[in-house]
Length: 261
Image (cartoon, rainbow, N blue to C red; front, side, top):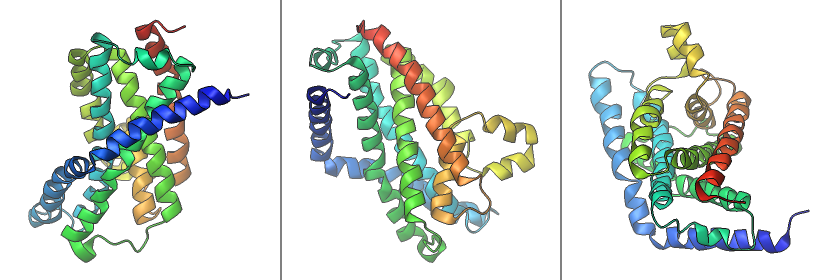
């Protein structure tokens, strides 16, 4: 049975974090604005002029949505990496009447919320820049919202796992340079899974071992329809599996870093 006091405390902490995030809405919108504008312009107009498909800009709109969501969660986790080696202010929450598991879950939800909320402006940016070339004709509201929120939850679980694994900012940046950054860009950013598989079946099979391919493919299905992408429900299931795996190991690392009991 869920402890009602612990649940209320967790919700209060989450609402406190959400209010702080929403309070700075102007800068959060600006943060979600500049990268998509530049890269959608480049991929929507410059690259097609150099021989890329005419609809490549639309493809990249979703890539930018995923990149910005993951980057937002990653940026939030950077503060936790600094906290692990510094004042450990997160320890205050651990003194409240709730378990370290509840604190850990709250952090993932907080990261997921930050990743999901303002970055949806990428879709509007894509529509303004590309016009009719970026169509909502096959947009499926339920599928898009479901997989987008699950993908953002994965980004949250992965980010806090990386912060707990690193333990400090220096090592956290190394995880970004050696693992997160490369995977963000090679696992579906520039091409669909079927394109990667056609290029090399070995590469295609290896991509199935990474969570980002399912985030890219699933959100694109919600936007463009099923044709040409991995099965939608496979994407949902695999993202949930990766959330479970990174959350379980991340919780272990979190407990170890903060000497939780």
